[in-house]
Image (cartoon, rainbow, N blue to C red):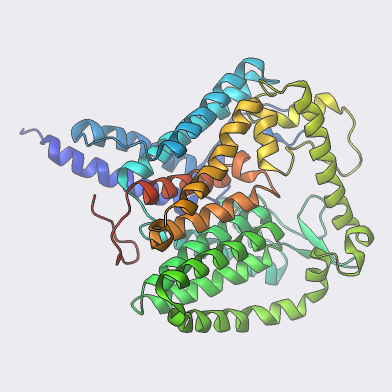
Length: 461
């Protein structure tokens, strides 16, 4: 039998790697997983300590293995991306590995530090395969649409849909532990989709919507109807998550993208954007009006942060977690308490929590990074937060490049979420989006790509 040529092997392995990459994006929010090892800890939510393998984890592993074979059979020039991204990202990864030595749970920290190593490879894959916001639009659009068609019925019916076989939680707004919004008298279920929490779903929808927005603005009429329909559907699902951080991230990212697109191209293109906005508003307004009391509770209308127990508890818990994390960090400033071990460190520091509080990381990503990996990890993470913006502000050519504008809009949204929640550092879907944003920014800035790409079309290297 004749053996296959290296070129043939390279062809199918590269295609497999790219397909698995798209699958990773599509499946990112899905909480369906297998339990590798149960590691119960008293009073701590099991997902914080168990060894879990999620569905998008499997797709990511397939991607990396296939990419390794593809590079072996068909080596290409290897890219690291701009130094101001890959050096602090490598430093952050190293800090996570170093934190294992002083961790409150060394096995747990090693498990999550290895995950960060795989995410560094995920970043390198994005940079070397030259992905852009345009080439991932179809995948993230499918991600958002898949979640939206489940989240919207959940919100309307106020219950789960019986999809537990593919990862859906059993949901009832009357149950303790289910995420709800209350106006002080009644409770409404927040949409979960197939995710672990409405905040995670909201973030994933917000990030996906920003990708669709830049593609819609640059795509002309070819796919405008499909994009517009998906955009409106996902906006409704985002609204139903009642995630304030996701709403803010989407708003800020949208303003950023529209502003710099207008400066680059003039304001004439806003006609098509106005039509999209009007259609979205028509669909969203009935839900907003019907549930105005719940939206008011989310924004302290009538002093809800004091008058409504669920809102008051959420605010007080977040302040307590930040204060406790600062105190613990002051005791371990150099090494931290170990990658992903912050809930354990909090339990050791405060053996008895106030009623309704939970052992979890502080809802501020930079603080969580510092708490877990020490001051050097926090410094590397801070550099990743600011250096892309320094470069963007200094180069006029980047401010007119749609690939850079879209990637920076996404990075802005992910960064803003990190000021109010920790899942971009702590959870699988949040990590995928955070490292994806860094990879897209690195690719767009280091190797500006030609304009005129359509939805899901691969660029030429």
